[in-house]
Length: 151
Image (cartoon, rainbow, N blue to C red):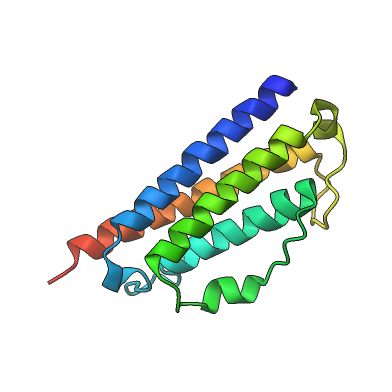
């Protein structure tokens, strides 16, 4: 189980770095933009992704005390690209520290936060990674589409 924990940490760090790279590539004036049929901007998705991980991994597994404001993740458009990237990097540190402190046997324990399904901590790490990557693909697609549809 220790190997699983290290693999999950590596996946999260890799994919958070990818998110930071994607956000860096978004043109500043397009960070909060979408196009017809797309609801959430790259900036909104980044906030949702970091809020979700800070809530479920940070608070749920690492007892960080993070208090999530999910509604704000979808409405706060007044922050800079640099602040978004800083938040992504801070989230990566939270995940690394949380997983470093976690004992391997905790992976088989029930996940402590409310969920519509019963998950162990290990299952929740997999579930959250899938959710994160779903949105990472959306950010990539939207970033490329916005860049191609300029001018």
